[in-house]
Length: 505
Image (cartoon, rainbow, N blue to C red):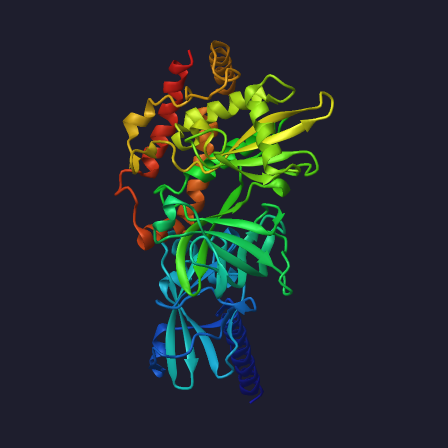
């Protein structure tokens, strides 16, 4: 009898222990079945609800802000750090709905189970928005690039193309270099379409001005690019590789940090844009080159922007000057003439010339698409003129020939340095000798094959591993019908080095 009682107690103890273990496992499983703050359910559990494609999605939020949602195909684009892609429980941020009757569930599909693979392939996973007995599916696309959501409406203020727009923006950044963590930045803003020839294409370029709630300009530091109120959203519409301008910026800006004249081109970072509920694809968020960016002395220094290759004088606009228009133009005339106290900074001119010739950047020759910075030198009571390139998309095989054209072989051997510069200061045998000598000096640093390939590799990996490049091609196609590829760009960049070695010998 005692043995039987003892056996029964042992059995009950073991059963209780098993139930406890099962409960612990259940609680652990339940704890793991959440992603982005949303419960995860099995695919078959969606069968208990009735599909309603008209269910309201306007209440969807991410990290407390209105979600970056493409309304037409019901897709949310969420920025994530690379470190959060090992499993769905590691994903950062919180999805929710501010409509009290709605609940959200993530469906445990293949994409959700393998976030890293989903990002690289662009495969969405499934979110369902449930209200009562009805549900509406929403696609969730993860990206390792920042996601910028802009919303607003047309104002009555005229702009170059139509009217100014006004509204608000949210920048979701999975990994913000400024904070070294996830960041969500908000601002009011105004924006308008920018550009010249490219403005006719469907994918637009925008100039953005950040505002505070009272309507005054507001500085924000986006993506580690520095604080500013004026930004450019560059669509890179003519560049099928989406690598040209970003790589040239990185190349030049890292180089000038080693020079005594550290005047950078525009700097930028990739992001994906949702504008008024429509996915617009891959963009380059850029700083504008202005007096703030260059930190110039507005009391004495002058900054101009080239906008024409037809004539030298008159082919630019005044960005900043302490003088009136006539005095500013007279200052430029004296500098071009070179007979007074104002001079070209020769080292800067040589290096800029080499860069433009390496790019075969015909749109930057003749001083078009160039900023001119006249920096005052109090010691000699005169100005030094520095050249700062910008808008380098027409390069590396891409050029203008009564229209936008691409020709690998033709541009590979193009010498665009010997443009008629209208000044003896720059166009001489001595200049040619200096160019050749400097080229061979820089072949081990700025223009080494390793330096070029490393920058291309880094930027290519950013847009490929995020899935953004494939989404861009699906959204907009290729401007040059498939002849301007990333692989051809690599070939051009290396073969152009070899050709210039001979050219400058």
